Length: 165
Image 1 (spheres, rainbow, N blue to C red):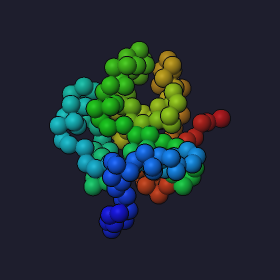
Image 2 (cartoon, rainbow, N blue to C red):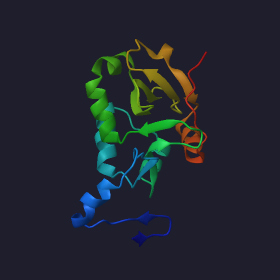
Image 3 (cartoon, one colour):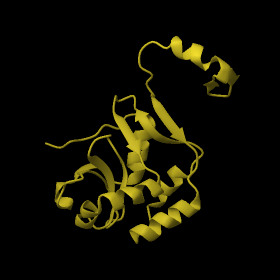
């Protein structure tokens, strides 16, 4: 067992894995995944692919020592955030949705077809929830007025998806 300042890591020798697996009862559930800094080259790739720069606050967050990648917040909300490179892959996969939403940057989602997006046409860029089958921006549901507010609510664990209505 290895202890860090805020973590515990168990290392199981390969020779003992079969025995360990025999003793696992029930499901193993990941509560949260944190990542380290995203490198500058990935942001340059994203800026070029989008034709617009990602907001400075989002860049700073993803280049921080540790950022929330995915998992359950204290609000009991599950959220998944994308790296800039993953975002470009989603834009390619959902080209029709991307075309219907010029200036869109898919930054995450709820694990379903609704995506958290930035509307880069505006400054500051608001965070919206958008269905991948949406025909235009008018169906977006506001989640935060700008990425800084979104990050604050995310980091406090208080973020919850607003579904309108």
